[in-house]
Image (cartoon, rainbow, N blue to C red; front, side, top):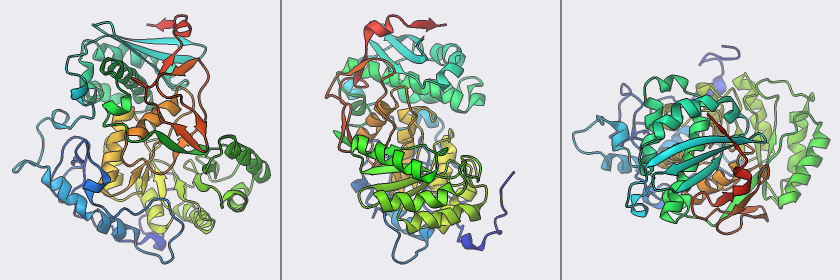
Length: 479
């Protein structure tokens, strides 16, 4: 494959690749310590875990470069050892594999809020003005709504109407954890793995959470484990690759001022290719941003898979370290898992990864093998809140954070807010790309506002907003 290097081609990353020996995990079952020959189906934390219960000395994934270099892998191994006790203790004696992993997985949806079945009567897709909405109705007449990804839903309409909606109809919405897996495993649906499958499923999940929250008279965050936060600190994302460094900095500074942001993320590299659109932009922009904004903002950088060479990715990482950036996102192509790990091993700056990932088991592999220190499932691309919170459980075992990527539009900011409100380990700042106003909506709980670099967490019933019924009444149902 283009750009891939042999495992021995870069002595900089000649590190110990031995397995850690602690139990790794998936989202379905808690298991004992493993040997190398066992498959990557491991356990995870109980539903209501807290960082204190895990008893991990957490290495902060957002820090200035360390004074003295250490072996990152050994450090993560040493700090994650207590997690093994949590995992082993949760395994029934004499059992190494669950007969039905989905059936034995501890769900997020808490039924104490929902004593009676909520049977899905219909799940419909509606469109208007380039926006896509999902309506779910129960047999008792309750409704939930969500907004789907504005671009990807248009491409995946038939997957929603012909695959996801028929599967969900007639099922108990309280079993949402199992339904998310069940539709994927039904028939040959697993062969559609990828964004165009998981994006419409995420939209269906958001609508069902809205339905359940309205029935239970609680927020989606409460349904998913409890509302831990009322305020969410943000980093503002910027995308000015086509602009020269000076103009990029001007626009970045303006965006920071617009919400009084305390953190920001810049784009570097050429997106899936090394060459900057403006030659030399990356090397010039990094120190310019650090000098102008580094004293008052936490700085992050996203390469969007730009560097096909591990060596080049490390070189850029060194520049980020020298300018005290706090994470380095997707330095090499997103599916170069071992190369990503090698870059992370060579650098002190935390590497972030996961925006493009759709496989639960590849997330498992990256956590188990200390591939990165910040995990970033996209709340649309990865299939919704439940699957993303599973990644957070995995990361928490090693004392790491799971800070999701969000897509612009389609109420992405809202779903991010729900995630950050209930997740124990979401990281310091959450991605922000603006409050979507492509269609009218109103908060049903505390008004969602962005001020002082923070956003009010959604806490109204369901997903926390109501899309204007008059607007929805004029949408077209997609069959």
